[in-house]
Amino acid sequence: MDKLVISGGNPLVGRVKISGAKNAALPLMAATLLTRGKNRLANVPNLRDVRTMGRLLTTLGAKVNTRTDRIYIDTGGADGDEAPYELVKTMRASVLVLGPLVARRGVARVSLPGGCAIGERPIDQHLKGLEAMGCKVKLEGGYVLAEAKRLKGADIAMDLVTVTGTENLVMAACLAKGTSIIRNAAREPEVVDLCNALSEAGAEIRGAGTGTITIQGVKELAPLDHRVMPDRIEAGTYMAAAGITRGELTIVDAPLEHLTSVVGKLKEAGIRFQPTPKGLVVSARRAPRPVSIITGPYPGFPTDLQAQLMALMCLNSGSAVFQETIFENRFMHVSELRRLGAEIEVTGSTAVVKGVRGLKGAQVMATDLRASACLVLAALAAEGETHISRVYHLDRGYESIDQKLTSAGATVRREAEAGP
Ligand code: EPU
Image 1 (tube, rainbow, N blue to C red):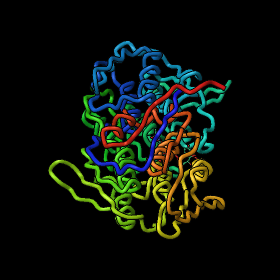
Image 2 (image 1 turned 135 degrees about the horizontal axis):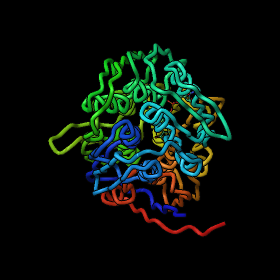
Image 3 (image 1 turned 60 degrees about the vertical axis):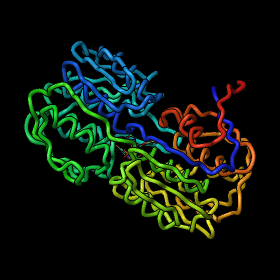
Image 4 (image 1 turned 180 degrees about the vertical axis):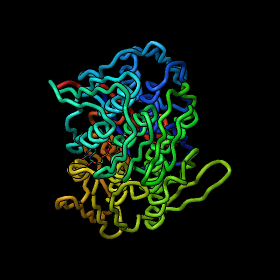
């Protein structure tokens, strides 16, 4: 296991290029199972989760080849139907193969993902939607067994907004007989990217990006050939990095159109944004002003940036309030931020962050992907050295983060961590 050692206190100055979005790449890779043939995805980030999805597709019989940021997935011989526990337990997004497998193979055995560090995360809405499409669903030995000769279009009202739930049902509905309507659908840009790729391959989808998505099933889809959208969460993280270090980063390929709520909050905090031909220049000179954040489904403030904004707010000039509405346990970073000197009180799903003048390096532990990013940000601003253990979480979702930060002047090194 690796740890990161960060010597904080330098303003970050330089250029950072945003990679393709993890949460768009994963459903797109799963969607290749709807096709038979040679799929090509470009701008795919080199991440642990992407490699895990590649392994899962290989287990299902697909041939997966990676060349720099391109992935070629040949699904011609993808005749498997089981997503095994060993892979699903390392990545919940494995559940995204469920919809495509039942739609194309008529049968799927997918290990139940179980809870994780940030919350329970059930998949009842995925299953309810598939059942509405005529799928027989059983839970047996920790696996979901799903079967349907051919799925039938259905009118599905989701009880809550779920991103991968919407994606699973959209993918399933593409090959169903008849029309499906998904109400209370997720509007996240990653859902839209998936729908665009499917439409390019012959699917008939209307309403992506709105709360109601209508899918007219077709007999077959052509292989996907798509460029993955840039990662809005990675971009937001580097914006917060410029803010917390009072530096100036030129962010290349930042998908500003998907970051309206985030940029709004950062501007309120006093961070400056200047679009230039070379990229988006994000800079800050002084302590951030306090802002209050309530996470919500898109276009609300993303839960995946809550922890990073909290790191920034540790140094605010007053008191900032955070309300987490998506996951029940997404304040795991709070106790670690306190080790660096932050003053944060948590009551239920609300955290109040009282700004302090400075943070001091310490030993901390990463508990999940976004909590790790939050600790990296805090460490970049803290005086002295911070040792962040369990950075494998970070490697699931941030491509080359050490190199990107180092090239902007951060002092970051990766060390092998001694075992227990
Ligand atoms: N939920 C249910 N039942 C369901 C599905 C979801 O109760 O059947 C609940 C969840 O427990 C949660 C809420 O609904 O409380 C929303 O969860 P959602 O299903 O939208 O989350 P997800 O699809 O599992 C995706 C991202 C997450 C991101 C969330 C919210 C991917 C691969 N993952 O997860 O990304 O936090 O949407 O935006 O797209 C990350 O990248 O760090 C990450 C965790």
